[in-house]
View 1: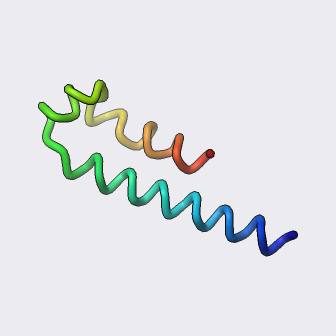
View 2: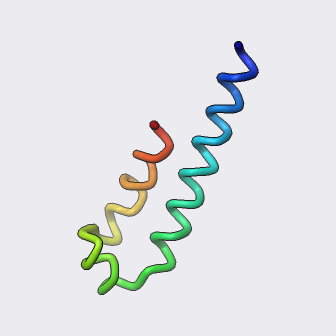
Length: 51
């Protein structure tokens, strides 16, 4: 039970890091097409972490 919880947190953090990295690779024009600003990247990536 505890191990499952820890593994889920590790996977969630990995999703966060992947999402953060992917958005940081985009230029401002592509971010605008997606509907976010550079300042919102961390917020959007953290939503992945919380799921």
